[in-house]
Length: 623
Image (cartoon, helix red, strand yellow):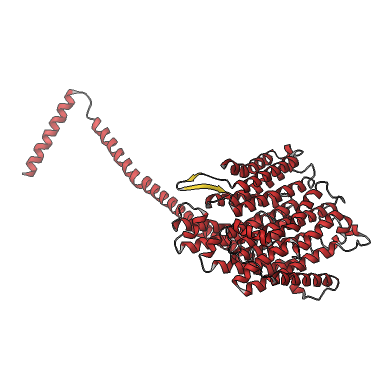
């Protein structure tokens, strides 16, 4: 049985590594091979969801690398594999043959494989490894067209922002070890001793909020839109951005054992859903609108996690994954065909390409939360959990749902307008369009659209009860009979107002428009609060190193050289001179001592006589 879970994670990782390494040498078969591997992975995921396999292997002393499929994981692995298959099938027709398709499809499989390891990991070390791999591959995918500097810079911003938040998981791991959780098993983290328990929780919350682009980290998602459309469709639906929400849902027991974590997470999710929804309303770029709406929709999942609505958050995650990936596929198809993603230039796009337009319409109405589509039912589950915690949370969540209807209808209004007299004049702002929809687009788009429409059945009383038992939270609150009616009325009213307001725009202060179009200036704030101080500190430390530390080293070296020169002079002029003088004296004495040594016997007698005479004279004088 354990072989099934190793196959589930190893197949996309291994195939992705092979495709990525072969690169352009595998350009022609890469799309077919990548899609086939994703399809097989989907089959394995379905089998794993039924069989619930588990496996582990030794990793470090006292720690194991554990993988398991339980109720929540079963939903996630099927969702991730299904969306990956659909997106790769769409991507097969999105890249020209002269591009490095082997690298692209390899990175996409590695990315999906890392997400599958993330959702099945039962120990923190393995989760950290997959978390890091997912971040690295997302950086490579966002900057896939790395020869364009703005895309490479966008990838760097996204990577560094999420990487900064990811440090929270390292904090959590260290605190868990200090708190007595030596095995680092995720289910044992709530048993850590205080105060380490609070550090673990804080680290997990920061990492999850950063990965899911919640306030104040949301701006990196705007930068991520520089990547290819299939990357956006996968990254913004069921994988990286959803990973943080999934982690909070998975570790809800950890949030529950602290008094502050649940409310903090819930309010962060609710405020993100509202604030980033307003950002989405202000956007004139279709992909930027969807990026802001992704952060807002993930906010509902985070709200559910903080409110104890694990099943509600799961329903929202699954429904949003299908809906948002469908919308990104449609937007990507239009970008390829028309060469633009600017909303004013996309007037009539749904009429020009009717199949894509019909799918886009269904997904946009689903994103708006209109009944009876899936996100309407999913949001009611989330709002029911929020109402159980706080009336204020419920009110903010309901307001965010109304804003969701506004930005969804705004996008729909533009693309369903009659074609202008000269539509081609607004095209090709991003690249030269093909004016055709790729043959690989309809099948995955229709599949995603169908799923977006019908996944609301998970919120019906029977399936909802089954899902709550599946994810281990049978006591979650269900919506009261009046709640679906209220949310439907709010969504319909907001949608009607948005449709009317699109033709009769209300005056809005330009400062507010710039603020919301600029993503609340969150990136500027990060630059001012984090980047500039860090860079300033780095420059100051560099100056300190150059002038103080390095200066001290240089002065010490100069002092050493001066001392060496002085010692050299003392040695040469004093010690060495004295030694030379002694040697010279010894040599002189030697020369004088050699002179009497002539070898003539009569001279030796004469010398002896002189010596005796001198001695006698000395004796006489002394006396």
